[in-house]
Length: 124
Image (cartoon, rainbow, N blue to C red; front, side, top):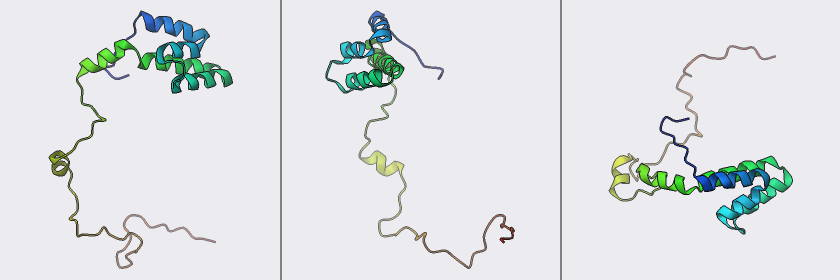
């Protein structure tokens, strides 16, 4: 666990967690809505395997918690999914000149001796 990790739940999350112990798809449907992807996945996991549906329900309840959204918005960390554009990309990345082609790695240079240990095994 990272040092700055905070687990946040409220009373609604606890009640949905208790409901998820017995009827996981119902708990996810209350949080997400009935015809949502997470609800259908939870229903299938519960119908086929049992316990994975319960774990999925706990995951959905935790990640969609109102407390978690509030904490994430207050953390003020960098948005890793944001797309950078403009001068930042051009200045931070060094690229090859546009007229220069990359080397052809299919050709093997025979005049350069191999570096490192050479395999001395005898093949039969």
